[in-house]
Length: 236
Image (tube, rainbow, N blue to C red; front, side, top):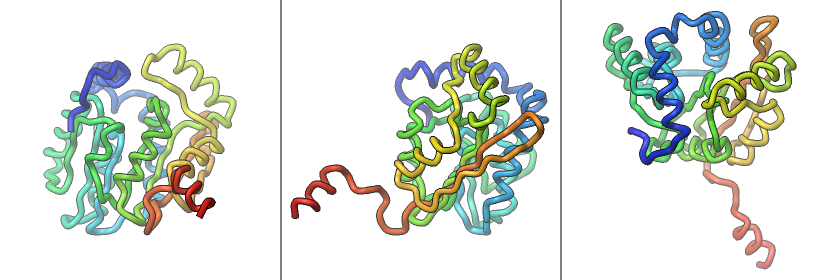
């Protein structure tokens, strides 16, 4: 599922993380903060044998591979990321572990409509790279089966330390679009049509603060009514 077109933002993400692929897992930020935050959100999800799970922005596959044992051989987990070299590293780990119900693909969030019927979609440590956050959430909704759950984790702008870090990221990294506060995340999820939305602010360390958002695709209607539908209903 390669990214189509010549989107410069996606290209910059791919180039940046291609350059970091081999040393990514050893970086201080990943080991001390991001891996712990990732483990927290995964521990809150009820993975069961036979489930189909999508890991959006999978990097070198840490979350994807952590989820796999909980699904059993009857389940499936798919990791998707924009960086070919990060995906290659994830695939190397998969082969090393001998997992047959795990797959990785080069792709981007904008193409989620090509993936469908997932029981769970997870996204950890990559929300701040998303450019059109609202559109991506709507595509996540399309990728979920009715009643499926979406969980997202990222740095939280409600906290002063993370707000400073987010601003530094925006200045120093062209791929760092920026994160949001917990209320904005909730609004984005609800606007996309997700139900039972919950957003928690979590302290990982004295410095690293995150937010974890969870929501569910409606069991019947996949999308909120359009403005045209609402108008017709009022007229009728």
